[in-house]
Image (cartoon, rainbow, N blue to C red; front, side, top):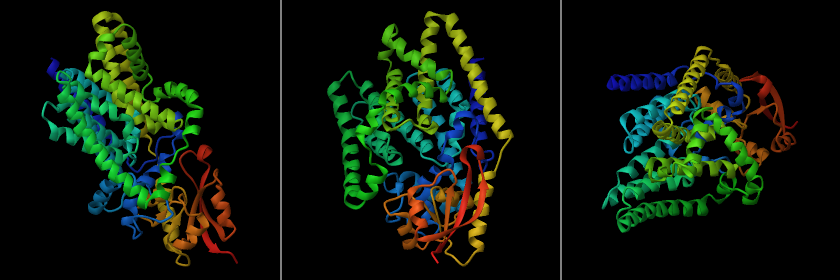
Length: 480
């Protein structure tokens, strides 16, 4: 019977994960709190831009432009490899993100099996597959799916390191470097990655220390080389993309921390409170949990990434995607421990978890049953308009222009952000078209209007017009 249940849970997880490939061109969901997300009209283009430029006859690096691929090259390299075989396509890029989440589910199971039963690991994979937050963001070509994959790969490798396993420890360091070059938030989860390596070898502390030193040595060496390259050749880009004001970041840290505990329910309204209860119980009565490697790893992961969200700024919903797996672990650990002490309460909470999972599935199915394609149709229309007019250069600029390029299948485009003023960028790169959301009127656009005539060509209501207003397309002409 148990074997049949395990098989059914894996089949259910596989089916739910497969649903992520359905309607990949559809608009991102506009439901309640997810409607505030901006990644669906900017971030896919931001982080695939280097690959897009490579396949649209533009320089991979745009001097004075917005060049995140310099500091986070792994995702554009992966997308570029897919584009090489499949051509520039939003479906290809998003399918790659979906495949990353499939591998993440398998790795989540594998890491869990290093510390827990097969049933516990199967529950982890199933809850991961049902999660609505993970579903929606696995369908965007953003950094989080690949980031989670490499993070769990590093954890799995760290869990396998034993005495004299220096090659594997070096591999952990290498995967961490790849993780950090995928998304620069990697250092916030380094303690979580290194903890299993130490915990599994702590009976011989000298050996554990040498293994940690091996992993850290690889990390310092490779990231140190990257830091030198960035400082010598890309200092201006680093200031724009990586620069932070620590005093400003810390000024409102406490209110942001309070909001983090509320926004954590974006992960799941039941699992996140249970994860918090698990941490509180470990500090109060269930102190034996601190001897549990999986528990401590999950706490370090959750705490480290929470620190990033609080320090950076009030993170949008996508920032909580990497917290799905540790939240599931802590929730299940709490239910498992409670089952031994208060079975009645454990059953009630388990029922809530099941109800929440059913709610997540219902949310997913409702979205898939009512797909909308306003943004895809808008991007296709913009490309047709640009290509039909030979009187101006067929190059698009604007915040989100590279997203339009991705969704439309490879229209030459560059982002308006970067070190170079917009007017200078238009003149330098001979740009003929500009896109702008109507609710934003940035200062750099006003400066461009002083040197060029921006002739409104079209307006497109996309996503939820009452929230985003409309997307406007301008033709750029010299001032007469």
